[in-house]
Length: 139
Image (cartoon, rainbow, N blue to C red; front, side, top):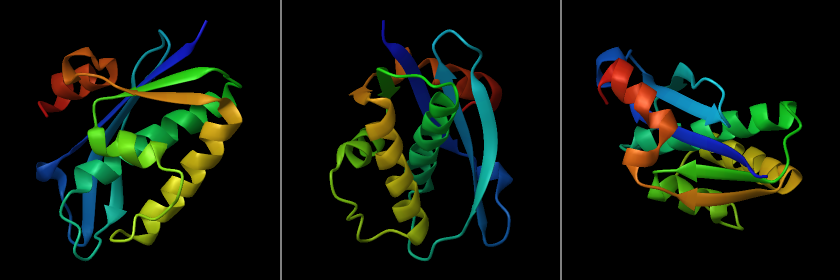
């Protein structure tokens, strides 16, 4: 049986600080409770779509936890087309993005290979991690 991970994130406009951007990150592994965090990153010059960075970070944190739990044969489900594209890319050539993007991508690549991860895009309506974000933050 496959292990299923749902990931989602949102950009929380009401929680921004000077020179930092805050997002809401959520993941759900199998039938466990959804884990949810507020996460801040340094402002990245020229970056306007922080939600995509937080989506990638949600996938990374979920994969770190899956690795800690020693899960194998994982299906990661995301409603983010951009995140899915980044996760499936073989090369780390996110040329217009930050050093943080590169580090997140390198770590996800290592974990995807180690754990044995397949990635699937799903509708937001079926993203169980996103339900908790919507409920709590109305994002």
